[in-house]
Every structure is written in structure tokens, then in C-alpha cells.
Length: 319
Image 1 (cartoon, rainbow, N blue to C red):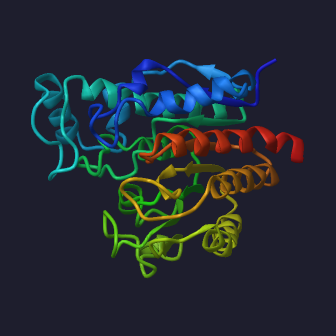
Image 2 (image 1 turned 30 degrees about the vertical axis):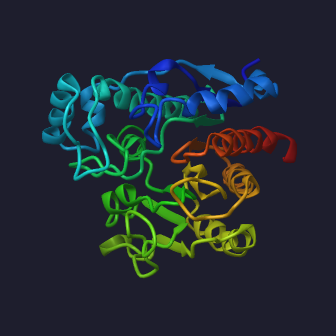
């Protein structure tokens, strides 16, 4: 019998990283999967192999000129892909392409009923813009997933919820005027952390005005702050009755991350995943894809992502 939760694991996505000395190193998937295996969590999951995205798929969100730039610098392994945060390395195109392809593969699996919910640890690269890399993010898998849900499945109400410490600016600005994307983001205040965006007045433009919610949190915010604000996120998403939910659950919002100043615990991540999964069930479709996002403390990565997956699994027992 197929487990209700799918997870993508494989060297192809683990290779997405910028070296062992970089905060976003290639060890991140292994930290999660070692704990999932050791605790028996892995046995409760359906594991899928990584999938490489075709260039045409990547270009659903990204411009052809930018994709060509990544291809060129992937071959040379030199230079920066943005203004300073995201270095090229040999094979970066293939590594980032596998992240995109795998996230879309899970999306198809959910839409076609192969699994009800899914998680991919190396994904949620929410800073990449349509025409450039940004903040360790080369291709924006979330953006490609959203475009795929619109183009292939005709969805008109797609929810994107982000609890990474950093604002998901690539997704926000990529769909700022798109009424099909319901966006909610709890993050460390942009006045104190990269990328400096995600202010409360940023609520969408044009026909999407009012469909974007940004909740900046002060540095040092704890679980009490999370649980005080979370009902606002949940009510905002529920009101729009989304047909699919994307959760970017970066663990850099957990206390002890080396490059952020948030102080949540894994309880926040477990709660967000559980409540969104329950909401998806309440709406009758159950569709939720969680992406690992950021996080640079190996213990937090392992515990936070396992807590998310456990919540996705345990949703069945709460129904």
C-alpha cells in the first residue's frame, strides 16, 4: 500500500549546494534523511527519485536569457549568478534543474493521486527572480510549480505559505499582480535581514490587491509570537479556498540558526504543516506540497523537517 506522504531523496538534489564551507552546503539533505532513517520515519514514507527538469519547464517561470546564463556558467563553474550571494559551480544547472524537476514531479504525483501530500527537502528556493539568481537560489522551483499548476491543471487559487526567516521575495514579486496566487509570509523583519522586503503594506497589486499577506516579525521572535500571528495566516488562506497549498518551511526561523535571529522551535513548523494539511482536507482535495527552504543549523534542519513530515503523516489520524 502506498504511503500517503511522498518524499524525494537522492544525490541529484543533495548536490545543490555551494561547498562544505558555505551556509548552503551539500550536507543539508543528509542531515534530514539520517534522522528520518534513524527514527523510523523514513519507513512510513513513499520515496521518489529526483527528476531533471526540461529547459522548457524551467522557462515557465524564468526568462530564456537567464536560463542560458546559468547553462553557460554551469559549464565554466566560475563567476556569480547574481550581485554577490550566489556563486556558480560546475554542474549548477543540473543541480538546480533537478530541484525544479523533482518539485514538479511531486506536484504531478499529488494532482494525479499517487500521493496525497509530499515533502522535498532541497527545494523552496524562494529568492530566485524570473531573470536572476538571488540569495543562494538559482531556479525558483516554487514559481515553476505555480506556473505548472496554472498551465497544466487550470488551477486559479493556489496558496503559497512561507515560514522561512527570509521573505520569499522571488515568489512574491513574481506573482505580485497575479490573483491566482494567494500569498502569506511570516518572516524576520526586512529592516533587519536579507532581502529587506515583505513589509505589511505589500498586499498585491492590480487584480491581486489584498491577496498577499506579509507579516514581518522582529528579531528574537519566539513561539508565542508565532502562535499569536498564525491564526491570521490560516484565516487568510481559508477564506480563499485554495485548490493547492505550497508550504515553504525553512528552518532558519528556528533558534540557533547562524545567519538569522529568529527564535521559534520546531513546534511552529509542525503546527503550520499540520494546520495547512488539515485545511487541505477540509477543502476536499488534501493537496499540500512542503519544501525545505532555508536553514543552516544541521540539528534544526533535521528536527524541523522531520517535524513537518510527521505532521503531514499524522494528519490522517486526526481526520
